[in-house]
Length: 395
Image (cartoon, rainbow, N blue to C red):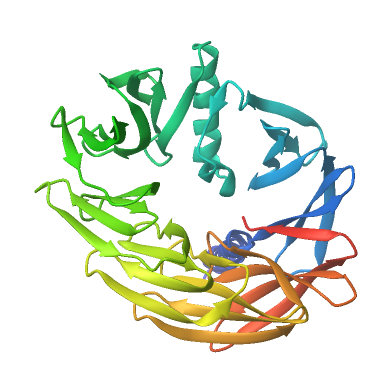
């Protein structure tokens, strides 16, 4: 073999090794996941960033008011803070520690669903900027009935007008009589539905059909949900759950127990989480089956995973102990159970991985945040402790 061929083979071999090293490093970087927490002080909250599976923890900034959501995008950190009814979206450059206010919205001029405060990502940032642009162009103020963050739609009501907006302007509108109680966007059809109340009667307006459907409801209105999978409006009153099939205009009712105190839709499913005094239930609107969760819940704390496959429930057993249950929502059984010493005060699912962030308050009023990994068992790894109250935010 010639010297040239040997040099070529050596060069080729080194190139392959270097390539594999970079691929490995790239995978490692992609697998890194950060967590964000805040420590609550009398003068505000301190935001800190750490890295899961590593012992890194770095305070970033102290902010007046209450932190609602945090989102990290490479070297930028976005967070929503509320104070006295006003909302600010701020951005921190993690390299220079410089803070800038991206959006400032007063709820006196704009009311919006609080769901946008719970999870923050790049699409939420775009949606908030769209809200601010719309607010600046409308001095009368308006109320957001629904928002589709994925497709960037807003459904608003202003005076007696319903309007479906996208970033490039209004797509559909409708003038109505009465009060708009709820709205739902159908992004695929670029259409919307709205639940209206007029003269003590309830109606559902469809922008596709351009007509109202009268709905008979027993009891006082509490909340409503739209289930896109079955094209049905679900209306919750203090006595019943009413399902209105928008394809056939058929109405069915499910009688509720008198002690029902709250309800929440499980995203991308036909299930509702029903809160009762000391109990939770899972109701499937399609089958009309009610599954009772067999654990007492003195102060309801539960979180549904981003993929809607798991439900985490905290059962408090007095002031000293808590038990974390993980329910498999596909098969309705407890897949994991873990008892901890102390009170679980905060719980968040990761948006990208199969784990939870939990905060536990001990009997000595000490707060400890944990990374809870879900495997055959629940594994609790401590990530930060403080004498100040801790709120955990998953990336």
